[in-house]
Image (tube, rainbow, N blue to C red):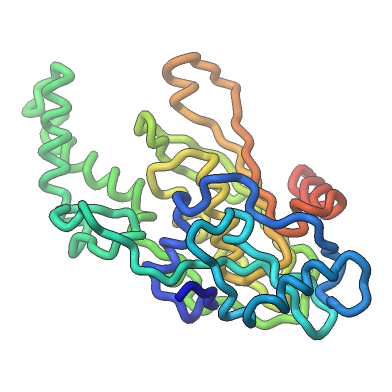
Length: 308
């Protein structure tokens, strides 16, 4: 049966399956046309549609997410039927076990939506080192000369470190650092350093990430925002997907009223090759909840991010 569950009740594989970008193929994450000023659904104008939606469904923990549901219902606004709070964002999952057909004989598959993984990543080093040795030979180098004798092993270890995010899950990183707190004003952590690997050319891109969210009586340990960035940046990535995954992960962690993420990156695939534009930067953003629907809230966040 389809349902929504709180973070603490979901397994690591379910969490990562829910966050995986293949579940979010479009940009319009949230429903439109709701008043974000309060969570109350009693008399405030503009909130009746949100109240009707919440009351027509099951309670928060069991809101249905049917197969084929539009993307607007994957991250859904949920009205608190009592009190004066903002609507919370709840990430929906279909409660199903990821299908591993076609991967049963994989010796290595690190996408975390699949359960099977190698015992340790270090077990991959010999095969990876041999591959790097073949690469050196293909480039016309002599892998046995003094400067290159240990290069294949060093390169293999470096690549495992660059992609260590495949071994990390949101559940492990949060480690219970979600706290009940009567706070509903904006929280922003900006200029978080980010290093990642472009999946198109296997060269680095780097930059900074700024994250803001509006709590609904739950806050996240500040260092955990930086650790969430590490989970998804330390993988083969494109910047657009990285931005979205960070925003959805924060939503999943604390069900806030809204999440905003801005990533500014320098891509070596543009600097070292191709057009070779050394001063170009790429800026991507994901806005969920009140940050998408309320221009003033979005403007406040962007002013804080751009301030010196």
